[in-house]
Image (tube, rainbow, N blue to C red; front, side, top):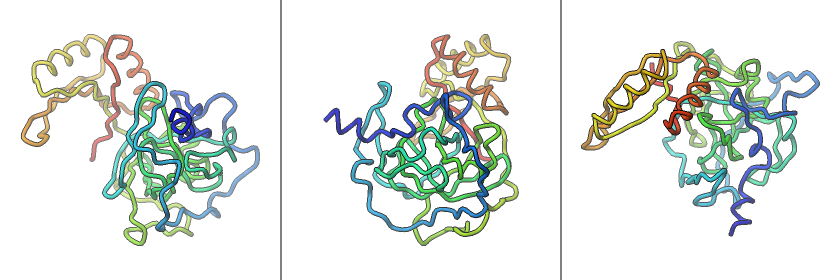
Length: 269
């Protein structure tokens, strides 16, 4: 059972992590020029689920992940990273070789394969990728994109980008032509994120944590409440934050003071 669980993990992405982006030592772009305008977006189509890439659960670095039964209705906002030459042609979690020049991606819990529309919220660029791998296993990283996908989104220089993900049902809502250059979507640009450092049903617990955070950072700390079912959930947010590096630094800073697993939130405009 242990061997089967390990087999599911991505040889391409398991070690491809640093806090500033996707890349571990020795990873990066190819040494030759690549015209990604000639690389088509992934074409959403009905495909069988990966035989090895969809266990109910798997474990990485002591954390258990639960694979989603379906991607229907999935959407999320967060930080994208990318991976490149070091993992080119290595086996992915789905069993396919990783191709840095294909429009693919890695996600921790989406079914393999899943087709996603990915929008760079900071410049409006939009692409379609096929999720065929697991990762990235770094705090506050939502998705790992192939080199080609990252270049189409114009995020190579920084190594990360704030993105909006939407699952695509094959044959429906595929507004990005698979054979066209990446589109640019207006009125989506956003560079604002927050760190959610806690969420409680007990309002006093949220107030106490917020006060602790105010002694640890000069960034604004606020409490907000949302309805979850019949209950109110009191959340503690730090921000706004405009740079991924700052979010990474604050995450580590709070963790050293006993605040575990701060989570990046990219709110809707």
